[in-house]
Length: 190
Ligand code: B4P
Image 1 (cartoon, protein in one colour):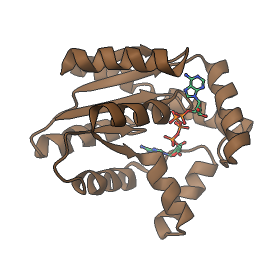
Image 2 (image 1 turned 30 degrees about the vertical axis):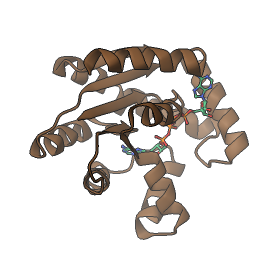
Image 3 (image 1 turned 120 degrees about the horizontal axis):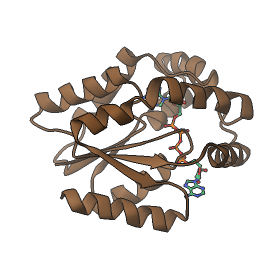
Image 4 (image 1 turned 90 degrees about the horizontal axis):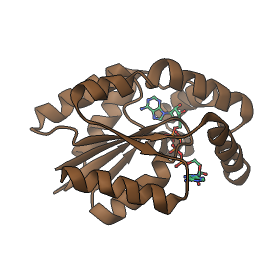
């Protein structure tokens, strides 16, 4: 099983590169951001809860995210593997993912860290907000999301280094060049 964690700050290209990885390697995709946005669109109770956090640039509570992740993961049949896009975002989520995979006789194959300078993240997200109207892609909320990334999410870099799963990827450049670097990293562990 090829279980990939794609990691990076908001706007680093996790969703963009995940689509390409899914197409090339034939694995399933879990984007926690997409799951939450679908719940918001459908007006569910979870969606209403999630909207409050997302619009403030905050993370959804770990216990809720961990339950969602396990139920989506278990819905895949005859899976060749999974790309985890936007999960984990906290140490508690990383520990829960490790435990969930261990209970199913699996583990994380690699963690790909897309590194992009902060000015570029800001430019990309403002542009995406203009095109998509995403409520969390405005300057004030993006700044809060970047703060949350530095305080709660970036400690996962050292966590995955200690696990021996960390792989750095330069996330600045053309989407094709970045994808080629990602494929080299994945092919090296297959
Ligand atoms: P997500 O949906 O995961 O979104 P993201 O981090 O903002 O973006 P991503 O990195 O996927 O960027 P993309 O490819 O789209 O999270 C949204 C919110 O949901 C979070 O703030 C949080 O509240 C909540 N949430 C999600 N998961 C959670 C969890 N596990 N726990 C708690 N809360 C959670 O790229 C961005 C833009 O850049 C696009 O417009 C793209 O076209 C462009 N782009 C991509 N690559 C480029 C390149 N190489 N050059 C130029 N532009 C590029």
